[in-house]
Amino acid sequence: MDFVTSMEGFVVEHFLDSEVFEFLAEGMSLYRPWAGSPYWSERDMLQLLEEFVREFEIAGKS
Image (cartoon, rainbow, N blue to C red):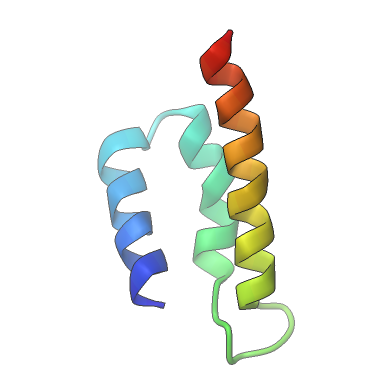
């Protein structure tokens, strides 16, 4: 939880008006690993981060 909170702060501070923010915002705001549906679990967050790496790794190579 602390990691996602710090990640959210970094993204808001440095990428607020960007595609990075749009990509991560929903998942970060819904991450509550103990709360159940509709909130996101650790597995959901891991999937989001894997998709983020794939998406922006490819974009960075262009």
